[in-house]
Image (tube, rainbow, N blue to C red; front, side, top):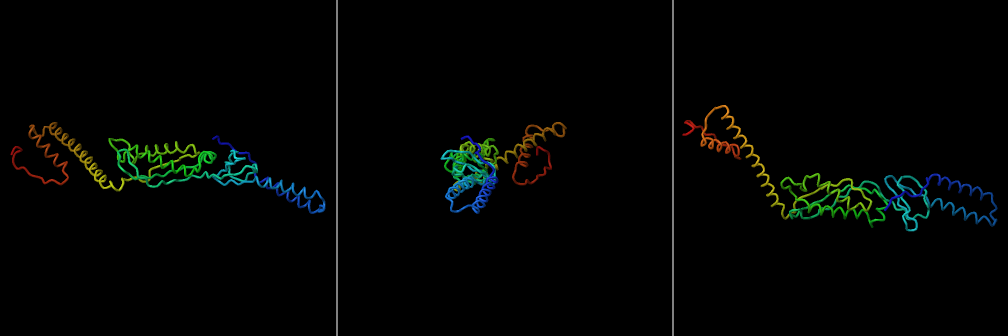
Length: 286
């Protein structure tokens, strides 16, 4: 629907005109012959004119707008705050808030990309940008935004895993996921004249029935990752030690002694407990 501004005039001059007409009528009636037959006609005309002026007055509050209808058709929007005069026959004049709103979805239970049940919730910051579309395109635009946001978060949850695999994005800690959620909600609520300013995942966790098992898997994965880094570092240190010994000709080691040295250094560097030193008082071969 094409948004357009309604015909309007400043309301304060209209109020002043109505007051002047009423004051002039009172002054005129005070000196008129009350028995004259034309007096009732003038009274009726005055009442109609003043009523026409007063009924056209409408107030638009700050950060609000009014959508006007004339005989059931869209007659325009009042986008600016203040007192305005419009066509008295434009009814209803529906008030639409343009303030920024926040929507916090309930905690939803869905399956992620890997099929694991998770609990997820989101916060959506939105506002009405096109009041006419919000009134005529959908039945209740606030309920429509709520329903579409819930649908979008369900779709997003099934598109990504809870945990990252091989550097791929996941539902936890990924900025791209929040951007995709915002774009998905915006595409769904655009017909209602709504703009999504921001959306982000506010709560995410494994469902209770698998939370303990998934916690153990996360701990195991963290241990494996830590051990992998320790081993990589230990191998590098052993390699550096052998190269330094060879470059400086400090000691000549055969392959058997190198293997023994590598084994001992890896045990010391990769062990999760402190090692006990053993002093060799003989030769390296005894």
